[in-house]
Length: 78
Image 1 (spheres, rainbow, N blue to C red):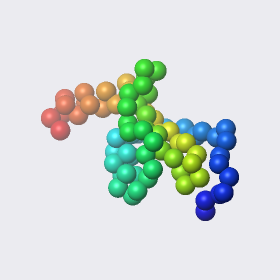
Image 2: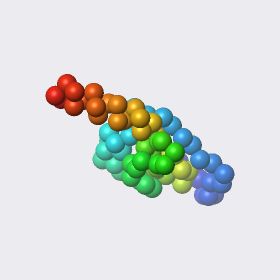
Image 3: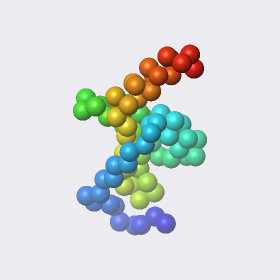
Image 4: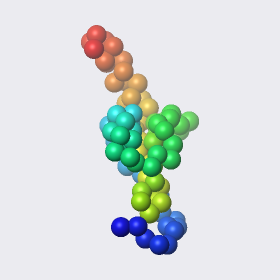
């Protein structure tokens, strides 16, 4: 249920295994995407959304993990 007051000082971060797959899933469900998945200079690939009350939630994964998975995927011809 939406609150009438604007949130202040709240920001959440959640680790996920695959930011791009999660983005695709929640976008299909109508999530309010604040920023699409992007690599950040501090080594994390992030996706940001806003919940129904306007609270920012960032989902992230280590870029190294993402790149290792891509190398492994290519190595097995998948």
